[in-house]
Length: 269
Image (cartoon, rainbow, N blue to C red):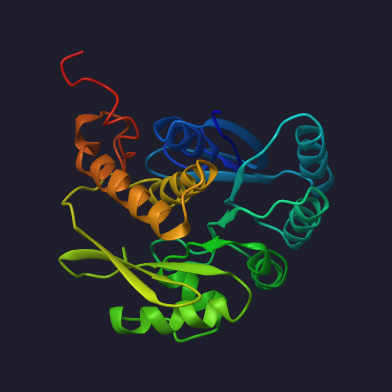
């Protein structure tokens, strides 16, 4: 049976991140993708010019209507820009008995600029972290959620993961993409141990949507029935290939998207 996996996130009309990237990652991982929209954005590969939040009651109606009809095997949560949305999503997941949840806390830009108001960060911490089977923050997001110093290093990553597990997430994948190391190293902190996932750092500016796509690939693999370490390993290897092939696309003049379908599309097609 083909799994059905749901993304709850914002829309990116450039197709590189958000719901559009989630659905591409789902397809690449061979699951059927469904989507509930939390925000509309105006953006391209160079800039975000507008963000328009969807009212919480509309998101609740999307979720309730979907769950009334469609079996959902796993859920990925991305952009949740308001406290009301965080609480509403948590309540609807509880109401429908959802347990396989991957939370990608889209909170901090790569520049380090905060994308959420403090009350929204607090709501994500309070309402969504305890419901996450897997939490996938990058380093700035991890430090913000854990209330730790912002200048974290590779050596700090396991402790950050442990601190976030203490706030309720069963597994925490702290991503090291912001580091300057030759390796792109992520660490998975679980109930019993710590596991590192290393990949070569690829020289490309086309990395738009990496976080969205990785978390969605993990959710897809959980929908297939993988355990968490296996899901993370498969998703990380797929993402590395998608970044390596990103330069074969020609999308915009800024930070372009990764190549979600690098393993599916023939280069000579």
